[in-house]
Every structure is written in structure tokens, then in C-alpha cells.
Length: 374
Image 1 (cartoon, rainbow, N blue to C red):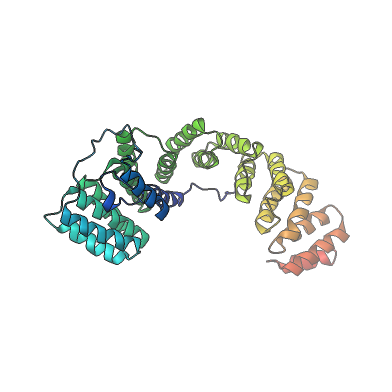
Image 2 (cartoon, one colour):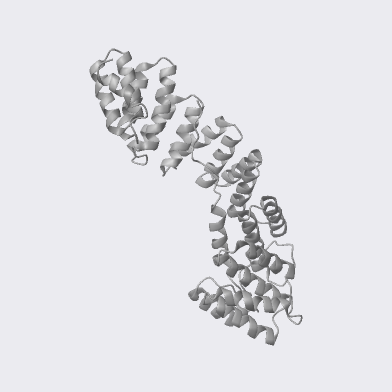
């Protein structure tokens, strides 16, 4: 008997990564282009302006990048338009941003920097509005213009991969990530997470597992990488590898949610390691992470049914007794009543049958028969 855990790859995580990347590298300040400032917050913006006055250079996020940064900057007239564009973005007037950005892009007199800057802001604005299809187009335009400094150029490239993933263009996302890593010579945990998620979506499970295992070699305590690696192994039918990873996570105290515990004990159940599954459940209950609820009742019922088929009636009764009080209906109690009756424990069978009726069952006549002693 196989049951399925709710554990799944982090399909939504890359969107959070995109937001983080946009905040981390932000939007280039039109008035600070000589030193390549980026906007994170008002305080950091003021700090950037101070550093500019002191002649400081922004730290290169991609010091090994193969791309030679362009020297093109905004023209005097272009700078005014970009300032208006940036002000609209900071005011969250995204419709205006899209309109003004398109005007810059369409202007035959605007240069590569101006077009790239406008497209970057348009992409961020479209993303903020939830129009990811438009964001994808604008980010592509920003890269094609090839006018930004490396920090922002490659942040746009990574965000493009994120949006491609969100648009279910998984192979395109992988291709963009390949380009990103090839040109920047950096390895980012966020990129590994995104690559693994895209590979999982393409059902290339072994490749996805390898990505996450590589991340674990660098950081054995990366729980997200560990859980995603286990998910990849499960979907590849390699339950032994999934169990090894999940057991390691449990023994290391990594589990903090019921689903993380369930990912391990369900894998044990599917591998016919029922005693190990119960140990995991008991550990989660003892720590207060697993709470008695209808889902747990269903899992107990699966274990009880397996015990019954194995001829272990005592274990089946013990498990149905655990399931009955927390189940959403009376089916566990009805099965318990049947087992009690088979064992000649008619008083207990009648009590369980009444519990089943009180909670509701699909076959109440069966419960009433047991309630009457036969």
C-alpha cells in the first residue's frame, strides 16, 4: 500500500527569490550612474550618495564576470526622462512607469543605457503588478539593450530566469541560468534552488537531486536543499536515498513543521518500515510539532490496515484506537469495533460501534449490528 506525502519541490520559492534579488540590487539611480549606485532603501540610497561624493566605487557583485561593462551613460536629456521614470517607480505609479519606459525604448535618440534602464524599471513595474508575461518581455529587452553595469545587468538576467520559471518556460529558465553562471562565474544558492525546481518540473529528477546534493556538500545544514533533494529522490523512485536524507534531517533537529515529519514517516510507510514510521510520528508528537488531527488519523489507519493484513491484530487495534478519537468521521472507530468483535471483546466492540455512529459512517447498519452484539 502506497500513500503520498504532501512534500513537493518549492514551486513558489523562486518568486520570493526574485523579489529578494530586486531588493538586493534594486534599480540603478539615474543620478548616480557614474558610480553605479543601486537602490535598496532610502537610508542606503543616502549612503550611496555619500559614497559617491567621496569618490567610492560600488562593490562589484560579479567581479569575475566575462562581460565588459559598457561606458555608455545617459545623455543630458535622457537623464531627465530617467529621473521622471524612477520617481514614478518609487511612487509605485507602475502604469506611468510602463508608459514612460516604452517611450524611452521607442525613442530613436535614446542610447543603450537609457533603453536598458527603462526596460529594467518596466520589468520590475510589470512584476509588481502581477503581469509576469510583460515582465519577461521587458527583462529580455533590458538584456538586449546591453547598456547597464554588470551588477544590474546580471540581476536582470537572474530575474528573467525566475520569471521564465514562473511562466512554466522551464527549459528557457535553465538556459538563462546557464548563461548567468557562465558569464558571472558565481554560484548562488538561489540559482541552485531555481535550477533544481526547473529540473523537477521537467521531471529530470536525477539531475535535480544532483543539484541539491551539490548544494548540501557546500552547506550540510541547508534544509531547503535537503528537503528538495529528498523530494527529487522520491519522485525518481529512489526511496532509500530519500529516507537517508530525511532521517539525517530529523536526527539533526531540522524538522520544524508537521509536513517535514510526514515526508519521512510516509516514506517509511511506503518502504514497509512501519515501526520506524511510528517512531517518527511519536517523536513529532512528543516535540509538539505534530498535532493529533484527521490527517494523522488517516495515516494511522493505513498503518492499522497494513498490520491487520500482516496478521498483527493487536497492533491494528492499537493503531485504530489512536485514529478513532482524532478522525474526521467514524470509519476508524467502525474498523476498531470489527476487530474487537473478531477478538470476542463484544463490550468494547459495542462501545467502538457507538463512537462510529456518533461520528458518522458510510455503513451505519454495520455499526448498529455490532452495537447489538452481533
